[in-house]
Image (cartoon, rainbow, N blue to C red; front, side):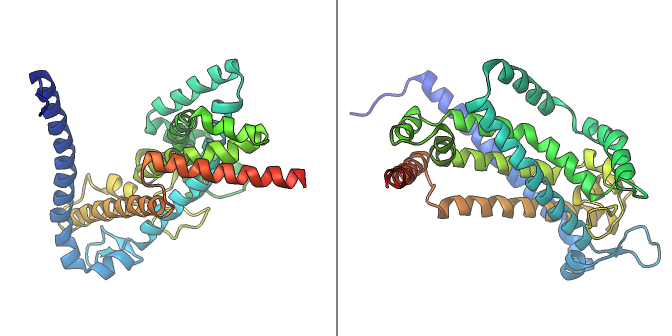
Length: 316
């Protein structure tokens, strides 16, 4: 016999469905708008010339150039550098807060992390411009401190709250039975953290990294103040321009083909983030971490097998 749905339950299901469809509609509208606004520039400039051109001279009156290869490489290198610098710090901080920190110390660190998450991005840029850039210029004896390296440091600091909060929540969500089984097999606390708890929390940590990377790639205001703004190849101490800063810096006065090219940069940035998310999702699926239960179960079985090998080596 079919269960009869109550009016209140039906109303809530309908509301949730509308909210879900609204989110999908927004994504589709943004995608369609960027495609319609960006395709005219691609048709006029040429896709190869636009993506692989090395010169961006948008305000040149007689022969404007719209090549964004240096900006693409700068965005990739900047995001990669922020990941290398910020993810390990955030990951180990989350592990410390979840498993090793005394309650009083954890009570001091967590509000500080939450405060970092609430600081506007332009404030990060101002602090970087007034403190970090002069420090790099003085310490490294550079003519100017605004560079790719300064941008990477600012982006890494901005990633920390996302990586720390989501990673800590994922570590705390691991079932106690995983930890207890590892300890029962003779593993130490540190071995249990790294060989049992972390594999089970892996999908959540991967989500934290993806969200952190999304913020690093999409940030504009902070790095506008510390990157220098010149279209150069992304060497560590070069003044550089990211894809996002090109849009922010020139949209106010752009017209005609120049304005269409900036919309095309937004389309390239949108496609880049989409491809990166699909790539990371594919890595998780290929590693056999499809569902939440499957991820936890496979991680638990792998950690138990690892701990059994450790115990056997100790007995031998």
